[in-house]
Length: 373
Image (cartoon, rainbow, N blue to C red; front, side, top):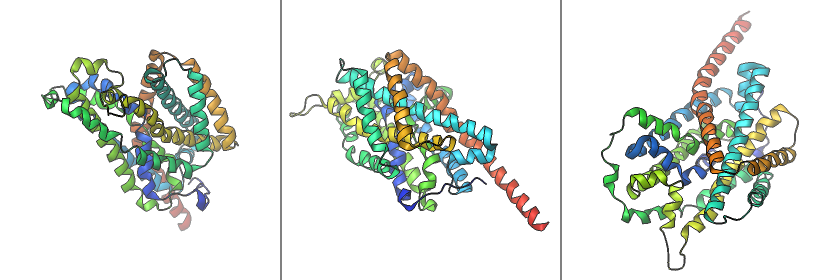
C-alpha cells in the first residue's frame, strides 16, 4: 500500500466544504456558451443530454470515492504509483499534471476571449493574461484553505446571477421543447458526450480527498454539489431552447451571455457587462483548483516549492495565451481537450476502481498467507 500523505491539521478542511469545491470547479467558462454545441447534436432534446451527463457525473464520482476509500489518506498520484509501480505510475502522474495544466490554460484563455469579445475588444491579450495570472498566483500562495474559501465566496456572491435568466422566460415558448425524444438516442448520447468540457472539475476530488477531516461524510456534499451543477446547466439549457429559434441558437457562440444582453434596468443598460466582469469570480475556483492539483502532482515527481512551481507554470501559460489568438485555435484546443477529458474523467475511474479492488484483495491474501506461515 502506498505511503499516505503526511498532513498537518492546518491543511485539513471539513467535508461539507466539498459542496462548494465541486460545484465551484464545475461552473466556469463552459456555461457561457455550451448550448450551441449540445444543440448541434441533440436539437430540442439537448436538455436530456445535459441530464444524462449529470447522471454520469454521479456514477463516476461514486467510483472515485470508492477507490479513494480503499487507500484512505492518499490521492490519485499515490494510488497510481501503488497500483502500477514507480515507472508507469509516475508516467501517469506526469500525464495528470499535464491534464490539469492544460485545463488551467483552457479556462483562462476562454475567459480572456470573452472579455475581448464583449467588453474590451482592443485590449491586449498579454495585459489580461498577466493581470489574471497575478490574481491567481496570489490566491494560490495562500494555500488550500484560501482556495477553498475562494470557492465558497465565489458561489455565495454569484447566487444573484442565475436568477436573472428568469427575465427571458417571458419571451420564451415551451413549444420549442417538442416533440420530445424525436432525435435518436445516439444523437442524445453524442450531446451528452459534448458536455464533457463544460462539466469537468469534479475530478479535483481525486487530489483533495486526503485533505478532508471527516472522510466518512464526503459523499453527501460531493453529490449535492454535482446535483446543483446539473440543475443549473439544465435550467440554462431549457431557457435557451425555449427562448432562441433553432437557427439563432446554432449561430450564437455565447448563448448565456447573449441572454444577459436582453436584461436591462433603469440604472443599468448593459447587464451583460456586469455579468462578464463578475464571471471572473466564478472561474477563479476553476483556475486555483487546477493549479493546485497540478502542483500536488509535481511535488510527487520533483523537489519544487509551490512558489517556484506557480511562477514557472504561469510563465508557460502566459506564453501560450499569446500564441493562441484566433477563435479557431481556441475551439480546437477545447475540442481536443474535451475528448481527452472524457477518458480521464468518465472512463479511467471506472477502470481504476476494479483494479484497486483487485490489488487490495491480492495484498490481503498475501498478508494472511505470510501470517499463517
